[in-house]
Image (cartoon, rainbow, N blue to C red; front, side):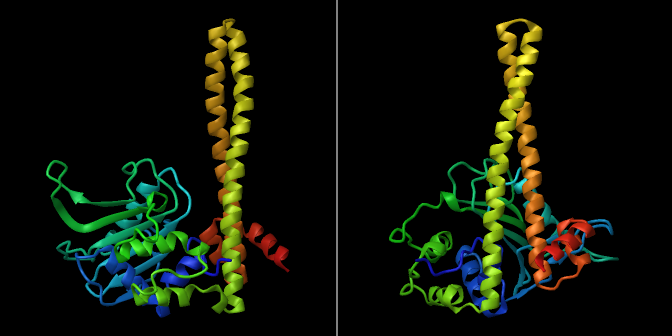
Length: 327
């Protein structure tokens, strides 16, 4: 039976990497990620709420946001499912942190490097096919020479990492193997290779969690599973609705044209339109359900209605109803 935290739950990821007590784990991981480029001796967790560019802009929330001893700003994000514009979203978040470095008055645009690291539990079709790690920098397209080191985005598509425990040769590969499979382990591997994995085992051992932390972890797992189930159901429903609507629209259009070719074309167009509408509707329902579950967690932590509304987009009436259901 598995005995370690699932790092792909929101609470689990932050419990492992986002606390002062486990800061050395994050430092070790980042140093292994950037092996040979620079060494991080210390880091400080920053305010994850980066103020928007205007008073009407919503704040951007990162999973982990920190600054190294050299002044590099690093965003570490964990994403379980794909999004249509995930690559652009990462670019937008990274750009926000750069823009927030601006100084009023005289300034020579001497900005600090900002790195975004994305753990992806899915494969994004826009990234190079079959490549586990994609490292994006500002470079000349013809020569490949880096023009600026001030913005960098690293995408780690975990489904494409296929090495076994015995095949892992570097500490970075060992990190990825452990994080990808940790929620299935009965024992932590690589304990003899590096002491950091012993610390990781201690931090992530489910048996050491307090009742309060275990409750938060189980809530996080439930939200993750519910969101996944809702997403899968939405896709299935969308496909079924799309086929039905497509058949009806295709038949009607085809009959109006009075030709077998028209029926086939109309059905294809109708199915495509219906599937798109059904999937979009399903995604919206899944996102709304995710916000409801997130609101429950925030309510259990004693957060105010205003704060919950700010981060979930739910109405005050919806939040009040959720609060009533918890009593």
